[in-house]
Image 1 (cartoon, rainbow, N blue to C red):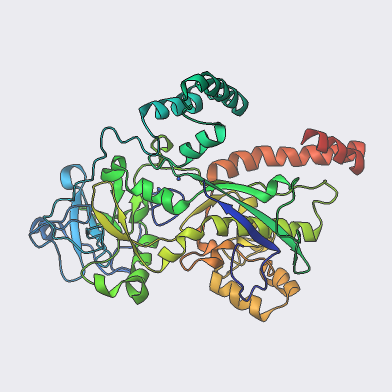
Image 2 (cartoon, helix red, strand yellow):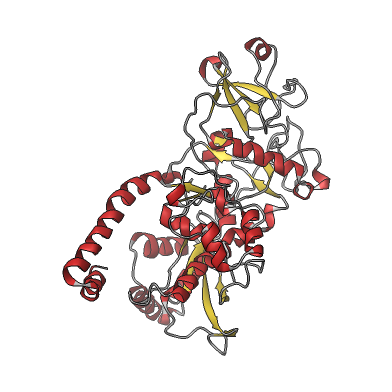
Length: 499
């Protein structure tokens, strides 16, 4: 479970024992992130940019395409490699759009559509179609018991038994036999949220499964059971929502002020990363299907970050193993726990892997389909979790190769390819000393073709300033105080009680 073998060595002793079928978006190519404004930023004529800023009189002489990637009938190109459009009130800003990825509309089979074709109508269900429920009464009972009354399992069974007994003389049957049948029908409902899935994990000892018969023991620890939403289906739900249609950026762009050509950064797709990624996707032939050569793929981001419309969706619950405080710092347990975290993330995100190389056709909220390719882009975390995710040691920079004792020195930026190279060349001890790298751990991003944990990590400013500056330091001071007053053994007992 959790990955492939590479130069990092073997995966940890983990395997998937069973998978039970049962949404940023934070993952995928659809991610929202507002970036701060920067003064004196480079213009389009610098590295990585195909188009140069244009002047006001050049802009006024042209018609431009719609912001959703739908081209107007009139020519909207300024030169061979440029498409420009006024935005905002008073036309004080303009966007230079990336020409490689144009988000062209297509049908459900992936065939591109003419610009003036209306979207196909959605098939409407019959008014008396209550599937997967047999009828309206069955649906209303399920809704009452599960949503309104939130009735416990035992009470549901008792109610259904009384109901069944009352129907014996009439040779009738209740709508549901027991809670299990009720829950099965509820879980098979396709309208609404993505169904929860469950999987179990187990470890191996000396290459052998922990359970000889392959089954999980009855009293298995909670960390062996994990619940999640399929991120692939979650993203499909978000893209298909009509609520976000007017709030998506389909194409990378660079925003400029029309008066002084000063570059602006705000939404995710206005950044250099989105533009450069579009360049790379365009250059990778395996990402562009030969039978779809009329158009290219749409990167995408949302303007809004409000969670109440399901633009931010919970993906999973991860339960990590715990032990007594005196064993928690043992190297073997620490390594197992860190690799378990990566392996669980890899398993949960695995449904996105095929679509990171080959695009898929996805329905959007405007009822058109588009070709989409995915990537893992941003992981927001505090320093503690960043250390865990990037497989480095404490007190080392997670973005470059600097130690905290010498942060001002010139240092190379961390990169997955560089990490793989030095892991191949050095022993584990040298890796720790020279690069602060834990070489026998495999980051979950190694299992995905379009992900690099060192590029993905983004600071969690709120939690790092408030939680890190107050809570973490305060806890550390209290711990030192307890050890100073009571001694280490008694201090750990007190801390266990606090935990």
